[in-house]
Image 1 (tube, helix red, strand yellow):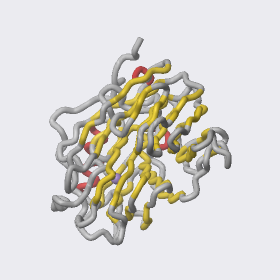
Image 2 (image 1 turned 180 degrees about the horizontal axis):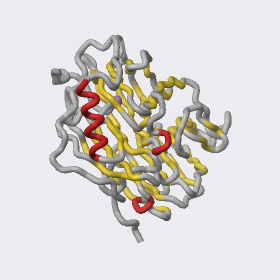
Image 3 (image 1 turned 90 degrees about the vertical axis):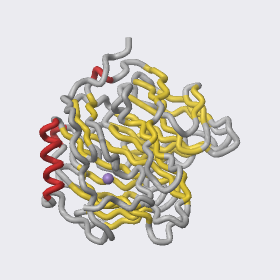
Image 4 (image 1 turned 45 degrees about the vertical axis):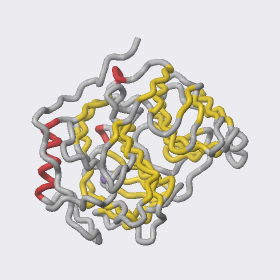
Amino acid sequence: MPRTAERSYSGGMSNLERRPEEAAGGGRAAVADAPVRELLSGREVQIGPRNTLVTRTLPHRERRMVGAWCYLDHYGPEDIAGTPGMRVPPHPHTGLQTVSWLVQGQVLHRDSLGSEQLIQPGQLNLMTAGRGISHSEESARGAPALLHGVQLWVALPDRHRAVEPDFAHLPDLPVAGGPPGLGAGSRVTVIMGELAGAASPARTYTSLLGAEVALDPGGSIMVPLRAGFEHAVLPLTGSAIVDEVPLAPGPLLYLGTGRAELAVRNDGAEPARLLLLGGEPFDEQIIMWWNFVGRSHDEIVRMRTGWMDGHEFGTVRGYDGDPLPAPPMPATTLKPRPSRPPRG
Ligand code: MN
């Protein structure tokens, strides 16, 4: 199978690294048992037509997961005018849900269930891989020039990780705090989970939270949180001050557990948008490699073989190109383990 075209934009929507390493994550020992403020620099994954900014902040060597959130790529804003735009050929997933969230642009999703969906800003597209699914993502014909978004994965707990695959397009998401919102000049959209009495219709398999916090210049809010959750904040546009930490797009601010609320304000001249992630600490230990989440190296090898044999992940119809071949397995293998001892 040929590689995707060199000039096409392929950041963010899937793990397209040519030599991905196995990564272990999960387990209580990896979770800060108190509020912390850790600024985690992302790893820039160089793919795309120009100086595409694709920043991967999860998994991070310091913090592999935030609740069940196990993967976070931030791409753009990127001007794709005059390029083929995003072209991510059919590829498989297992044991996870993908959350596609756009700030700008349009992406066309197709999957092996027969779904074909235009992904637009402010709408949740949630794909549950479960026992296995394959999908493609590409710039829609006539899409706006600017492409900007995040791609996240949620690890499924063992008892649900072999569920039937599913794709849900959820265009109407609730706003926390109802019409008045949580504060003047603010809008908090609940993408996954529940916040301040507003619950997303998205199906989840662990207790978690995903929300987009939008603040006008001068806006300030206190976001209620669950003390038992881990939390983290990723700035998407503009700048903001989160628990007294100044933030601009790039790093992920990991906040630990034990917080009942979070102060966010926008002292800048531009509107700010931030992604707030949270979740109950993920007790199980996982192995991630390429686009698979499993529990052991041998299981990952079997998933890879199932994809390369071509008959375990269905067929994506309508994509103009060949499926993505799996990279070679790394020479070193991992066993699941806590990512690091707890901080004192
Ligand atoms: Mn994908």
